[in-house]
Each structure stands twice: as structure tokens, then as C-alpha cells.
Length: 129
Image 1 (cartoon, rainbow, N blue to C red):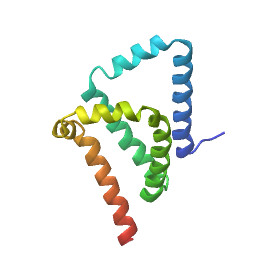
Image 2: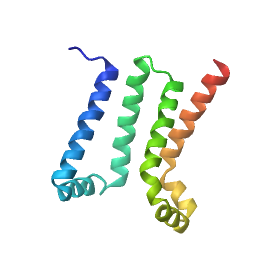
Image 3: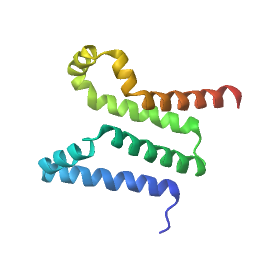
Image 4: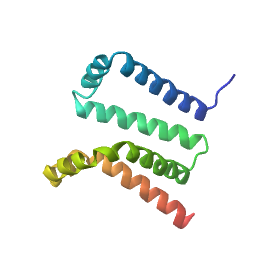
């Protein structure tokens, strides 16, 4: 069975997610240790995630997926994530209010820039294509 690019990307997500769940259920302390190591250097973790995200975006685009389709899927995923985070909203809201907004924006500048560029790209495609 030959897999195309989209199937390979989906398979990567499936395998990584299943492994994560199995490890978390069998040995949560190992998972906590692993995640602690991955995020012990947030700048490195962010940079690696950025490179991986841009790589996946590239493969999606060369596979014929449009930015509009990608943004539509992002909406779906954002809503699924909201389902999981909703029960923690009271704690998250308190935490966010305690933060210095200027500091937070400086810390998430790359993330914010990526989102703004993707949104502008999508809007441009819808308005000018």
C-alpha cells in the first residue's frame, strides 16, 4: 500500500498520538519526565515546533491543500481543543489576568506573527483570488 503525502502526515499524527496515550496510561511519570525535558528549553522547543509546522505546511501545500482548507481545519481543531480546555477556564483566566500583557506578547511574538501571516494569506485568497 503506497501512501500519499497527506496519508503520511495523518499516519505520523496517529502513531505519535497513540504512542503518547499508551505511554501516559502505562507510565505517566515517564511522560512527565519526557515532556519536562522537551520543554526545559522553551526557545529550542518553539524553534523546533516552528520548523516542523512550516515543513508540514509546505507538504500540505504541495499536496494541493489550499490555505482556505488549512484554516477551516484550524477552526475545527481550535474548537476541539476548546472542548478540552473549557473545564480549566476559571484557572486559565486567573493566570492570564496575572500576567503582564506586554511580556506575554513579547514571549509569543513568533506564534502571533505566524497566525497573522496565515490569516492575512487566507483573507487575501478569499478577497483577491
